Image (cartoon, rainbow, N blue to C red; front, side):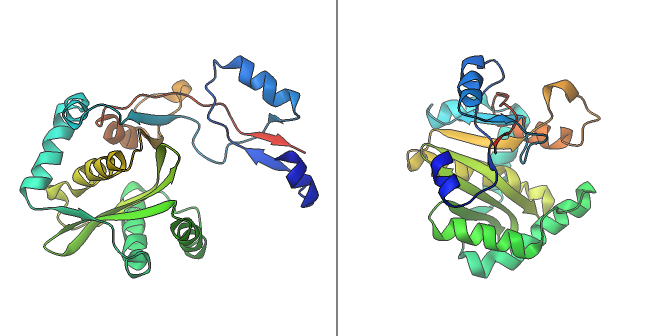
Amino acid sequence: MLEGAGREGAHTVKIEPEVREEQRDVKVILEGIGFRKARYDLNQKATMLVDLSPPEEELLARMKGKTRYNVRLAARKDVEVSEPDFEEAWDTFYGFMQDTADRAGYPIRRSREYLHDNMREMHNAGRGHLFFATHEETPLAGIYVYTFGKKYWYIHGGSSNEKRSLMPNYLLQWEVMRWARQRGLTYYDMVGVPRPENFNEGDSLWGVYRFKAGFGGEMPTSSAASTCR
């Protein structure tokens, strides 16, 4: 990797390996080939990881009671989950992201153009998938995931301000978990949750954590980003 970067004239190579804090031996290997701890992480250091290998009945049983209830409520209310055409659905999905950011009180940190092009490239490569939860043909929520190997990642998501009592986000997560299992994926990385050193209700990600934790995942902690110049 480093030799290839050198041939291309790269100044810096930055990686964010999925290495837990206690895996000191791996850190030694990374340092041995020239990587050093970066000043900041590109993505969230603490994540929520769901093991998808058990049967569906066990996955449901691992969920918190309220989460499982909301999944079933949305299904009873005829919420449906599908994978729409990316370009046709993009404007609606970005609107969901805006609505969610407005409700939570935080900005969308990337431009609309950047997000579109990034998701489009991953979609074209067969690594990015957009899903909608709809009710009576009206989209209510969306999630965009990356896939690689036996794992998939929750990259972007959002929901509208309409029909929130139908709990579309819960069924959306569950159906995408089922979709992933059917394709041989065995792990789901739900990404950002509060860091262990700031694990309290005052953290800006606490609400996100409570939602994600309901699906029965665990919180492995990865090492910070590393750079090699």
